[in-house]
Amino acid sequence: MSEILRRDPRAEWIARNRLHPQHAAMMMPAGESRGPSGLIRRNPHAVGFIGPNGIRRIDRMNVGMPTLRGGQRAVSAVQTTLLPLHRVEQPDYYIAVVPDMVGGRLSDHDRDVLGQAHALIREIGGAGAVLAVVFGEHREQGFATAGVDRLLELSGDGYQAYAPELRVAALSEVERQFAPRHWLLPDSVAGGFELGCRLAARLGERPATQAWRVDAAQSVCRGAGGSIDITRATPRMLLLAAECADPVDETRHEALPVQLQQAVNAATRIRDDGQVAVDPNAVALAEAEFILSAGNGVQDWTLFHQCAEALGATEGASRVAVDDGHMPRQRQVGATGTWVTARVYVAVGISGAIQHLQGIGQCDKVIAINTDAGCDMVKRAALSVIGDSSEIMAQLIRLVREHHQGEFEHAA
Image 1 (cartoon, rainbow, N blue to C red):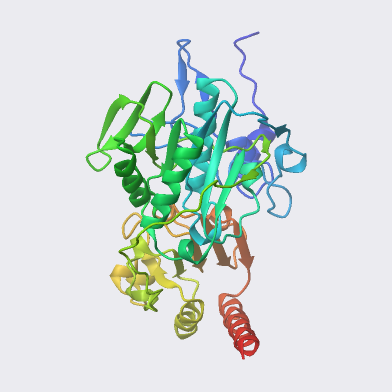
Image 2: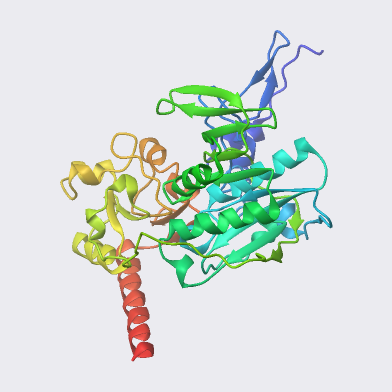
């Protein structure tokens, strides 16, 4: 009797029907399975798996969660309940984290670095605390849920502008006052790499760069453009790659404010003259932070260009739109075009071919505008607007102009 194979017709029907509310949960790949020989087989496509090339799969958009009726994703129990409070009354040591805070908020990369700090504390043991050092004004309200035990906010006109010398002087004062056991910074072009190198030179440390697997004993870093791994003893200063660790999501932290005991003064040789207005389309797609991309669903291309201009977004396109001659080849996004890492990617009339989804895999937030609620781009997106693209873009232009007009009247 044990050799009789029993089929589940309902499960097979759900597996074939991609629009079924239980399809996503049923088709979610398992992390491990036992083969016929008894050996454990690991699925390299499962969320949380680290492959030999160092790519870590983290489900940031909750795409692996089951979908509810109407296309809404189920909310995890962590989000619906009050997280337990983690308190460190008297820290034995500190691990200092200097997040990039791009746009005045913690980025996904910043949260990964905070998660790595707590991973080190769990391995080292004792009453360790994560000290986050934040420069300038910000709009972040989630330091507690991101894993910050102590928060040092350094505000003022000097920290708002590009002032690496002043920031390094402030971090040197943090070194003197708190003596962190480790310094953790994101290895990014947003400022973490430069600031980490300057601080390492000031403190006489030899940092580990592009570190993606770290423990208290040794660190594995990417080298030669990511083609090889370099293993070394874990130094005191670490410049961490994205997805180096799982972000904190199961505990709440105090984020108690702390202050420096002495004022920071530094002779600056660099003067910041402020931002310079540039044409968004002059920014390379691979470096753009805000992209408005068009696909075959766009009918009014003049309106699309007006919308991109009003939003101040860099224009992108799918392969179909490029092949049809609506956009130049250098604007193509995807595996066969340009891989983008925008903070916000707005896909207008793009169904979501696998090559296009691969090209936007590193984007933080994806917004889909489409008439098909079941297309792959809508499933990938964090926010979807179902409707006619021309009507939605016209409304976007109107809202942006009203916003700018209100700012102008308020300033006058």
